[in-house]
Amino acid sequence: MKKGIHPESNYVIFRDTSCGKDFRIRSTCTSDKTVVWEDGNTYPLVNIDVSSASHPFYTGERRKATSEGRIAQFNKRFGTRQKGA
Image 1: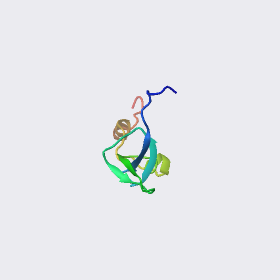
Image 2: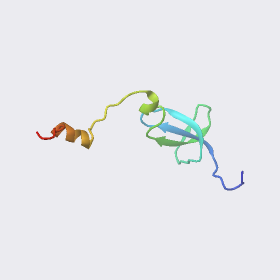
Image 3: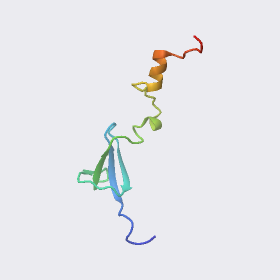
Image 4: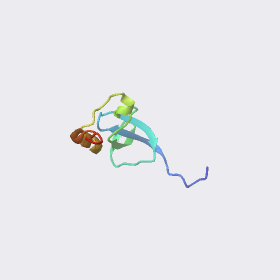
């Protein structure tokens, strides 16, 4: 690898705000917020909305969509019309 062209990566704590789970991962992200991790060291803290701990694809939970699509609304209102009727 060429020296001096890659960003520096260090350990960062990612906190999933939807479920409260924390992950310690190497990343190039930085933050002004810090948190003390289980090992006693202080790491930068990055808040995220969705992670593998809360996303329905990874958790296996199914969520029903709250709104129907435009085509479904149209078909519900008018139905399928027969030719010649």
